[in-house]
Picture 1 (spheres, rainbow, N blue to C red):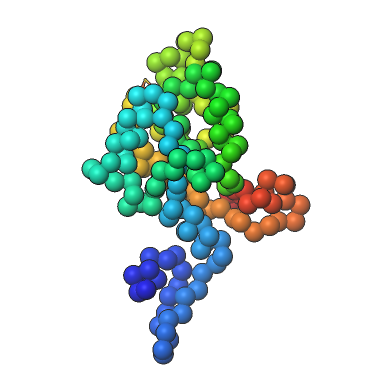
Picture 2 (picture 1 turned 135 degrees about the vertical axis):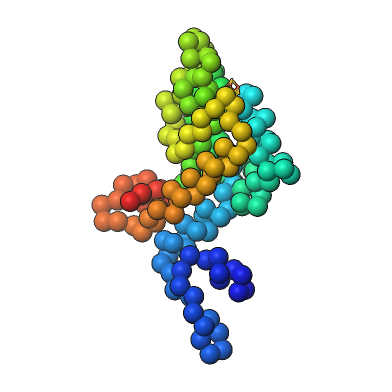
Length: 182
Ligand code: SF4
């Protein structure tokens, strides 16, 4: 229990017979959320090989709480790894909407960011942010697994700024617990 309390974002003090821990609900929720990111297993092209490398034993995504899930219903992060062809645009949008709120997107590699080497192709979407919102972009062709892990760290930083409190006049999406960044 002592180790868990040391890692929690808040104030922890000793009292006779126990310990006192003080934090805000937002900090606690955000910390829990960022510590268990479950990405959808979703590879589109060669960048997906580097993504798989990030999950393997040498880089070991699991130690950061990143566990791949086979269903969008169980996932909160979509890592778009590879070339987004126009034929795949509709399935990507559908899968994105099947993920529960709040959901996050990492665009991995030049192809997902802007079309990459296929920018001039008639069949390639020139950036996945043309069809779904992106939280973090990872540059490179392909980016190394460390770059993807760094992107997850940046996403976690972003998640720690989220506010889950219902605000007066909040939009329906905010009411569902969507992100409100300060
Ligand atoms: S960015 Fe490079 S490595 Fe990644 S999918 Fe495109 S061509 Fe392949």
